[in-house]
Amino acid sequence: MTSWTKDSRPPFLLETQGIEKTHVNYAYDAISLLFDETVDLNSDFINALTLTRNGKSVDLSGYVQIVSIGGEANRWTVNGLSALTQEEGNYQLKVDLSHITDMAGNVNHEIREFSWKMDTTTPVINVPETAIRSRTGEINLSGTISESDVVIHVQNLSNHSSLGAITTNDVNWNYPITLREEGYHDVLLTVTDRAGNSSEILYSIFIDRTSCGEVFI
Image 1 (tube, rainbow, N blue to C red):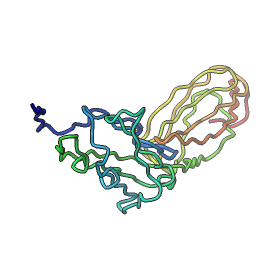
Image 2: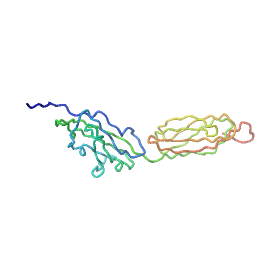
Image 3: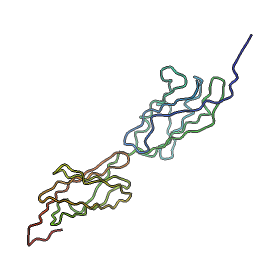
Image 4: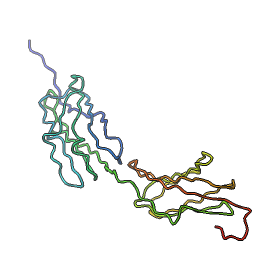
């Protein structure tokens, strides 16, 4: 007596790992795919993948390999992306599940998309001056940055204290600080963009509330 199992349900992609961030300063190398069932080893995996950089197609042949993880036919990893994602730019990886079948030949027509920006350029900081004298200790740091959407963090290195942080979406910025102790202060301003690239400016600030006859800020 012959028996079989009728299966008309397509394979579903349950989980993906490897491309979690939308802004990075390194090349993504691999992405793992977890299906809810065994998929056919003869599925057309390579044509299921499409990679673009700044809207232009990137040829995957000769670089990308797709292999099962631990011999399990529902866990797969796409390797070799790093050779294709080293250049700066806006990337999009599409996984067209219609090229992947289960053991009964069922297909899922869903398309998964992963987008990210690869950015290794450090932000450039321009400030009017880095040597500042003040009689009040109330100082407004300001300047311009070569890119927007960054985090500015200010530290007083002289007493190892944080003076706070802000996120700015403008290339023009200002940040008021208060220094209560008289004397010299080394104040470090660090700018970090969304990809993790950072630049620093070191201020030398002198606070003197007792001097006379000089013009201070």
